[in-house]
Image 1 (cartoon, rainbow, N blue to C red):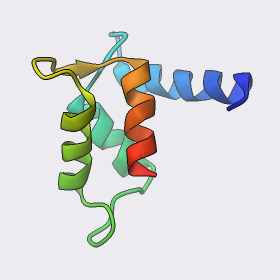
Image 2 (cartoon, helix red, strand yellow; image 1 turned 90 degrees about the horizontal axis):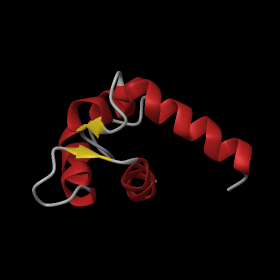
Image 3 (cartoon, helix red, strand yellow; image 1 turned 180 degrees about the horizontal axis):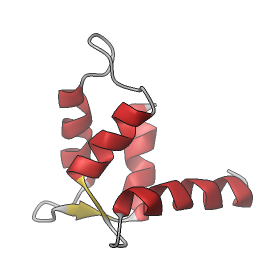
Image 4 (cartoon, rainbow, N blue to C red; image 1 turned 180 degrees about the vertical axis):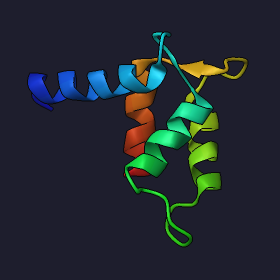
Length: 76
């Protein structure tokens, strides 16, 4: 991934984080919905929730940028 692409992805991540520097599951799901990644057959909202649960630390409620990138890989 090129540096400018990584910066663009980081900015999108931060935009969905709001005032925080980490992202919650609700924002992760909103990002998937806004990008029209979810549908009724291939990637459901439940699938997105499961990806989020898989990438976050066990007791965490939010994810950092690195975990976000892992989540994008899993969705792809």
